[in-house]
Amino acid sequence: MTLPLLLGAGVASAGALIELAYLVGAAMFILSLYWMSDPKTARRGVHAGVVGMGIAVLATWAKPEVSEHLWILIPLALAVGPGVWLANVPLTAVPQRTALSHAFGGLAAGLVGTAKFLFWFHHEPEMLTSFRVGAIVFEVLLGFLTFTGSLIAAGKLQEFRWIPQRPWVYKGQSVVNAIAFLAALGLGVTLVVDPHAAHAPLIFAGLVFLAFNFGWMLVMPIGGADMPTVIAILNAYAGLAAVAMGFVLDNKLLITAGALDGSSGFILSIIMCKAMNRSFTSVLFGAFGQVTASAAGGEQKQYKPETPEDAATILGESSLVVIVPGYGMAVAQAQHKVRELYDALKKRGVTVKFAIHPVAGRMPGHMNVLLAEAEIPYTDLVEMEEINPEMPQCDVCLVIGANDVVNPAARSEASSPIYGMPIIDADKARTVYAIKRSKNPGFAGIDNELYFLEKTRMIFGDAKAVVGELARALAGPSGMH
Ligand code: NAP
Image 1 (tube, rainbow, N blue to C red):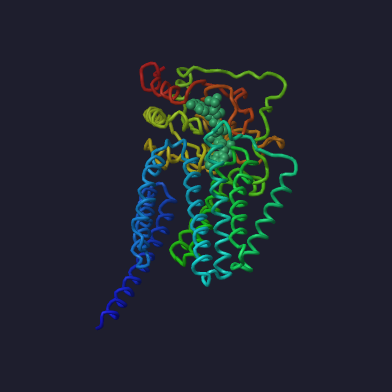
Image 2 (tube, rainbow, N blue to C red):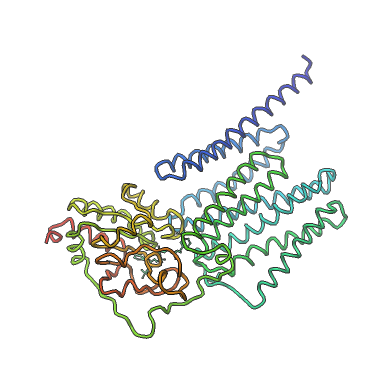
């Protein structure tokens, strides 16, 4: 064999190896999603995703056309610091952490699209086919929109002072948005029709400018309470931007990974909207969170406080206790104390179940993750639809830092912002104990009638401290009344 033939054969087999690596990477991503759908296999799912991504990066790096290896090392080295920082944020900050990840993904897609357009325009104009330019327009619009939108979402979740939590709305907003959208559409179509025109880079710059602005224009009018759903939608946008990037770069793995990412983002946002009984449009345009606390009405209603010791006595004498954890348990990091309480009650022969609302906390699966961390058996975690029929037989419903997800206004008050959201029927239990620190409302900003019911007793205090006291009272001699 001659040298050119040998080299040719080498390149061909390297190409085949890279394709094979991409196939393995894609399989890993699919397995990762599959395993992540169950808490028992979720860790394996995360590892599979990491391995899949590692294979994808190495295989792409090994491509013969990649020549500037040093240039690749620079961003990789720069990414380590923020990556380690993002991986170590507390669990309560995971929603904003996720938003930041999407922001980076969107920015990367937008930058790759911009670089490709400019490079091809100046050096390889024959590459700028209408199809490729269409994909670039899509990629840049969604990528930069995801970038600024996700930054605003992260800022709202982090409750930065200079980003209002309340929906930011003004008169004629939808008209301004519509004009901007039509302008972007016009610029995109102009580019697709004639990508080689002398002023194409200028049109492209206009498109990039609009894309950057779309993100904040779309997210600012949405209230902080809807940010987790918005993040799921932005996740879908970032995935679609990656699909477009896959077409631009002619990379099948990117298309597959982007499609998986985009579709799972959409599915997640649909699940969340369903759990809150809200439509996509009401999340995106409903200005949720504008309503201020009012439900308690004119007269001053009275809470009935209880001491942890007295509550422990009643808990210890119950046969069925249902615990409803919420965002406050996450804030207090009370899960390990909850485990102690669970053990103490079990020891006394009490049946204990955890009622898991799909949007309790601030991210999907928030309560499952915390309770799994405390090694509470999955079998005692019961989903809302299954636990609700049991609530009338429940002796004590112990609400730990939950509010909106047990608010009966969701069933009865048509004017309430949470009206129609399915809730855990805590009010149907024989007795209710609710642990929270103050009289403040939950995330939707509304009062909760549950706390004023005849059967309800409030145990004011930090969830970790109060649950710890309950567990001690039940375990120690003072709990043995
Ligand atoms: P919530 O309505 O936000 O109420 C949490 C309660 O915990 C508050 O009333 C607060 O009262 C209390 N709390 C905070 N820190 C505490 C501490 N250290 N110790 C004790 N109590 C503490 O929470 P939720 O019932 O879990 O409802 C979740 C809300 O988020 C819903 O409105 C849901 O629609 C929304 N949301 C969730 C998701 C998701 O994916 N999970 C997505 C979108 C929207 P004090 O301040 O008085 O203590």
